[in-house]
Amino acid sequence: MRILGIETSCDETAAAVVEDGRKLISNVVSSSEAIHAKVGGVIPETAAREQLKYMLPVIEETTKDTTYDAIAVTQGPGLIGSLLIGVETAKALAYTKNLPLIPVNHLVGHIYANWLLPDEPKLPGIVLIASGAHSDIVLMTGHGKFEYLGGTRDDAAGEAFDKAARLLGLPYPGGPAIDREAKSGTPGKIKLPRPLQNDQSYDLSFSGLKTALRQIVEREKPAVADTAAEVQEAITDVLVEKTIRAAREKKVDSILLGGGVVANQRLREKLRQAWSGNFYVPEVKLSTDNAAMIASAAFYSNRPVNPLEVQADSSLSLENL
Ligand code: KG4
Ligand code: ZN
Image (cartoon, rainbow, N blue to C red; front, side, top):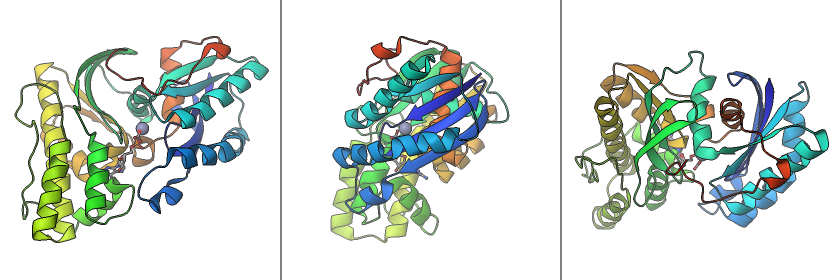
C-alpha cells in the first residue's frame, strides 16, 4: 500500500509517498526557512502564506511518477495556520479521490522516521524525541503503544539551541549553526549548568541554561566557537544521561531517536558511545520535519477516518495518546 503523507506543522511544506510504511518512493520538502532566517525566527503568518503557495506544487512534484492508495496528514502539534493548510488540502484530496484519510500526531511521525531505516527497529525501546518545540522520553512497546516517561518543563532542546544561537549572533535555525560552530570550539572553557541531569525523574528543563548563558555572554564576552561547544555539550549531556537511564531502568535493548535536534552530530556520537544495544537514528534529512515519517506512521496506525471530520489540533502531545 502506498500512502501520500502531507506535513505542514511549522515552516515547511512537505509531501512524500511511502510504500508499506518502510519504502520511500518520493520525498519533497520545501522550506520557507530562508525568509525566517532574515528575522531570526518563524513568523506564523508568513509561514502559512508560503505554505498556501507551495502546497499543491509540492504534492504534484511528489506524485508525478506514482499513484497512492491513502492519504496521511499531520494533525498537530504545530502552528495552527500552518497545520490548517495541510489538513484542509488532505481532506479535499481524500474526499474528491474517495481515498482513506489518516490523521497523524507529528511527534509520533518523528518516531516513525526510524521505520525508514534499512533495519526495522526492534521493540520495546526508549525513544528520545527532541525538536524545536518538544523534548520527550517515551517507552515504545509496539506500534502505537507508548508510555510517556517525561519531557521538558519549559524550553524544548531545539528551542534552547535556537535561543543560544540568537544570543551568540548566529543565524536561525540555531541548532545547525551551533553544531557547525562547535566543531572549532572547546567545551568547558565557560561552564554552563546541566539542568536536572542528576534528577531521578525523566523531566527536562532548558530555560535556566539560556539565562546562565545570557549572563556569561554579557559579562565575559566569550569566544563564539567555545561557547557554542559548551552549549551543545550541556544540552546533549542531559539528553544522553536521561535517555540511557530510561533504557537501563526499563530494561530495553533499543534506543530510537527522532526530531530535528537528533540531527546533531555530537548527540549521535555521544549516544552511540554510551549505548552498546540497538541504536536507531534516522538520516539527517528524515530527522528534521518531513512528510515521509507521517506516511510511515499512518501505515502502522491504520486508523482511517471520515475525511470531513479531521480537525487540525495545535495542542496534541505524546502525553495522553
Ligand atoms: O523537528 P524539527 O525539524 O521541527 C519541529 O518539529 O520543531 O526540529 C527543529 C529544531 C530546531 O530547533 C533546530 O534548531 C533543531 O531542530 N536542529 C538542530 C540541528 N538541526 C536542527 N539542533 C541541534 N543540532 C542540529 N544539527
Ligand atoms: Zn518536527
